[in-house]
Image (tube, rainbow over all chains, first blue to last red; front, side, top):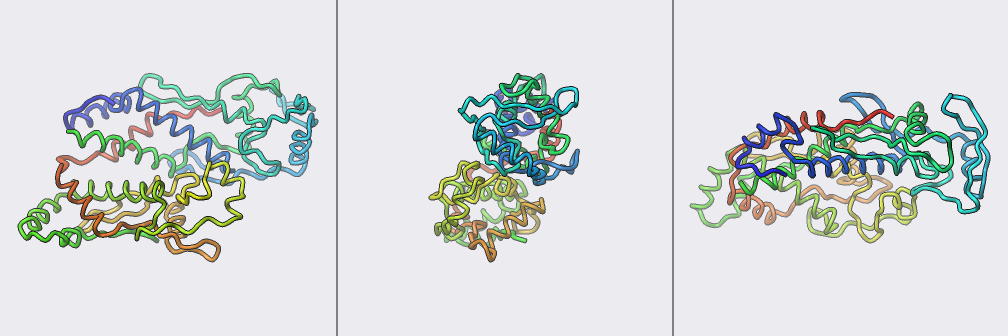
Length: 188
Length: 176
């Protein structure tokens, strides 16, 4: 964080941008906190509803019985089930597990937490760009699908939106930034 | 809903030296002092809840239930059965803040209903969950914090509203 001699100096920098006030490294820390918040909330089974200032936490829609069966089959090795391809067509997909059963962190057969292999949530990336910190899902390829991680996120978001920050989560971040600044201002 | 209201004059009353008491009382009328005092109380409540795992009276929290310890959520949150820290997502403790500094009092609580409700469950307990009242600090600790604030009296208010607006502008979440 840049060195300021008074809160007024900090306030002037803040008027320009959060990056001016906090510096690139602290802004990146804040971005990583936001990523951790979205990741943990989703793994716990919660998505979001609403938009803008009124985004709220909401339980993710439960998994269908047939998909639970498919997940069970997947764990047991090489299950087949219906998926949607990049053109919106339903098609039969076979997981290439080769008996290794690579499930993601927090996976259980019945829990709706957007986790099977875990690739999508592990691909939330944080980048500082000019005055902002940008969170996105990387367009990285997947081992189990012709869709990339961003495309998978787009698909799952239709019924289970998760990629946003709730009012509580934004307040947490604001409180964290305030805490950092208060610690800094004790040195004024 | 749970709130911690601290009368600063009662905190100052712990000082035995009358001259110091008068000086502290004058200094503590400043809103910046009250806000900083409240913020440091919030920090300390969070620290002792998460790290020391003790309630407002300094007693250890009741253990988590066996069913909760065995749950997937418990594992996902990376929790330890021997460390009762009232943290799952982290939203409840992370959103606790100073909500009022009018008069001689500083009030700590929540502005967000869902977190306020969760805090109430912990503070009062429920039929399924024991009471774990984390919302408070012993008087002696409150006085120590007040003295530390008065040692380096803040000269200006941290612009929380401006920080909120800057955070909202700066964090961009790209829709997948």
